[in-house]
Length: 309
Image (cartoon, rainbow, N blue to C red; front, side, top):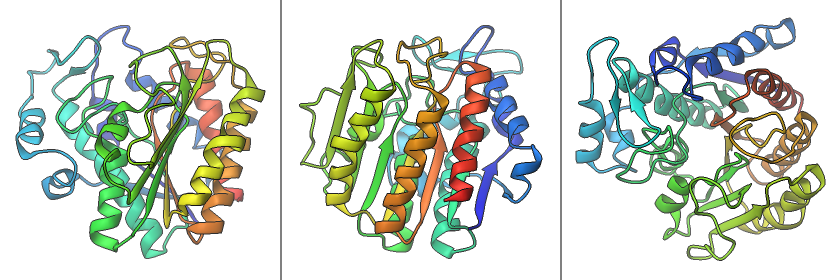
């Protein structure tokens, strides 16, 4: 099965300032890990710039223009909230990240890849309709889902999110639309404070909260017993994964105890769902993960499993 790797070096030019956890080294270690010989079969593509039309399926024009107009001088930063910054290269990086998500959808729908992984930054799942936040400038997964519906006529799109932080942005964008499904396992309480089990949208939102210190067995049970049955019931025609690896026990930004092997298990389970409902079509987008060694190992394990499934 052909697996595409979509990225762009412009994503390295998004400078978040010294000591920021969402730094360019995150993408550097991921791309270095995916240069190993076992990954030579990946079809490697350069992420295009997302168009304003593609972004506007999710974000109002005024918000898009506001973000794209922030182009500080080289070396300067503009702060959007407590932890979200933009540098001279951030606008292009954000367009490439969203563009990679769009290309990943095109890859699996056109059939030149069955599975696609977008190794990009900034991440996207915290960005709401009109609010950049939580390191995120555009809602990459939501842009991908709306592109699948608009261009390819996909009736039901699911986004599943195993990042340790709840994807408040994806949920906010989807919560009133039964044609899209969003499910997340995440530490709670934790940033951004959303994602209670009672948040169910129009029956299309599933949140499973995990207490600090939760380990592999509870993490797997959340997916096996709650999320996967709901996902099967929704029967998506396309599966998009918000692949954040910060639930790893080594990650400094949260307190779950997930192991790399758990990401392998979950990736295999999600590929099973994709084969059952989506003709094997799955798009995976990099979200969080802030311990560089754990991130590189977890992404490698994730992509290795995608290639083998």
